[in-house]
Image (cartoon, rainbow, N blue to C red; front, side, top):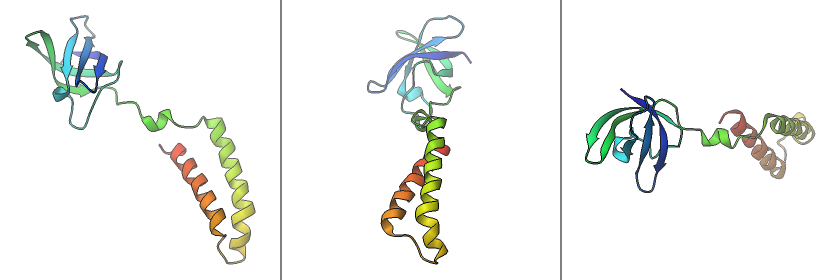
Length: 129
């Protein structure tokens, strides 16, 4: 099967073009040829596909993604240096606001626990996107 890279793809219109690795003509690709669950493609994404001659030139059939789509979560991740600072602040906050109450056999007040919970969830999202 030929391989290539997405030249462009318009999600709203449901079609685009792929540049073949072997230098052949650009290949038309429509949404129906995409794997199930894939709504669109990004420029530069690598594909493997079958080719059929259509009325207006080659068309892609049975497309398979060679590169996974880029992760939106990873693109939004904090830089490691910033995350390091956030974790240090979280540890200090836990030591000052949570541990003293837990040592006295009681839970901290809801205001503190809500704030700390939000910080911990933010750290968890960045560590495991």
